[in-house]
Length: 152
Image (cartoon, rainbow, N blue to C red; front, side):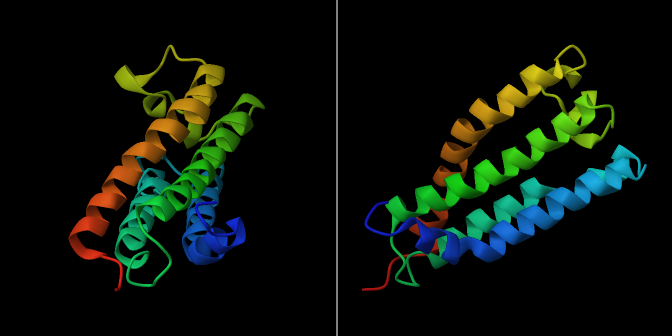
């Protein structure tokens, strides 16, 4: 992919993928354990993902890993993982175990109280992965432009 084996991308970003997984599953576990959403919302995989985007933007170029093209699969991988964990949480809620991932206040614009779990999961699958990847790639590219220039 863009001149590199896929395994190189995963190897480069493994610490970030592990952090997203740990935080995402901790968020689910805390919610299922009965912690209020007002507390659990601060255990944020989005914040971890943003940190990953900043890290990639600063490290991809100087490390010799690549440039803007190589940034895109890194962002895509973490976005798919992030949205996959959210979809897992929505599925768990549908099976009768309510949790923060499908709480009405987190289902989208206007509180999402009328949004079904299926629509919410599909939004994560399509909008979250496509739009999220492009927005994060734009941010990572800006960071790369400003502070993560490739070594010469």
